[in-house]
Length: 252
Image 1 (tube, helix red, strand yellow):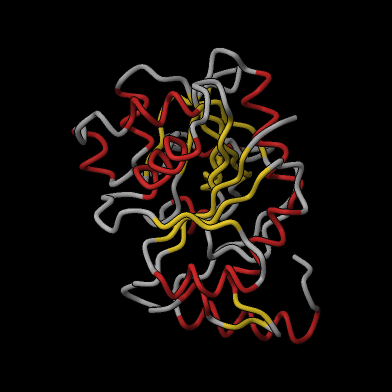
Image 2: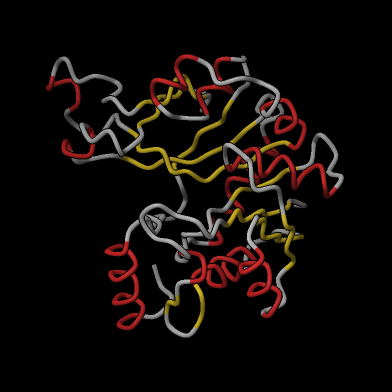
C-alpha cells in the first residue's frame, strides 16, 4: 500500500520552544517520530519545516526534509504545500504524523492509511478511542467525535457529545469516542481545503476538521488498533516522557 507520511515540525512553540529538537534518551524527539513513521508501510517519510535548524538537524540523521513557507495558518496548509511540491496525484494518500508524538505506534499509521484507501467515498480518515472518564468527557481540551454506522464522521466537538441526558442509557459500555489527531488525506482534498475560508463552526470550536464537514467532505473514523499515547505539549509532558524512556525505553 503506497502512501506518504509528512511530519510537520515547527521550532517555535508558545509552551515549549524548540520542541522538535528536545532530547529524549540519546536522540531528538523528532528523530524518534521519524523512526516510528519509517517503521510503518509508508513508501516515503518527509519532514516539513519552516526552520533551518530543524532542516539541518534532520539532514544529519538522513531524513528527507522540505523547507516550507513560514506563514501557513495551519499544519494542513503546510501539508498541502508539501503535496504540491512532491507533485502527488489527487488520489495519493498523505498521512500527517505530528512531530511531538515519539511513541506513536507504526501500526496506527498503517491503519489510518488503509482505512482511507478502502473507503473511496472518504476524503479524509482519522482515528478515535473509547472515552470512559466523565472528567475527560467534560474537558474541552479532549475532542469528541460522533460517527454513523459506516464510520462517517457526523461532528467533532469540545463539548460532551452525545450528551448524556439519561445516565442509564450509557450503561453497558462507553458511547463516547475521543478523537485522535492522526489523519490520512487524499492529496486532492488538501488542495481544496486550503482554498476555503474558516467556517463558523470551526471558528467556534477551533477545530479545522469542521471545515471539511461544512463543505460536504466525508471523514472516516475508526477505533485505533493500538493505544496511542498523547503527544508532548508542555515542559511537564517532556519530563514525564523522558522519565518513561529512561525506565522502559521506546515502548508505549
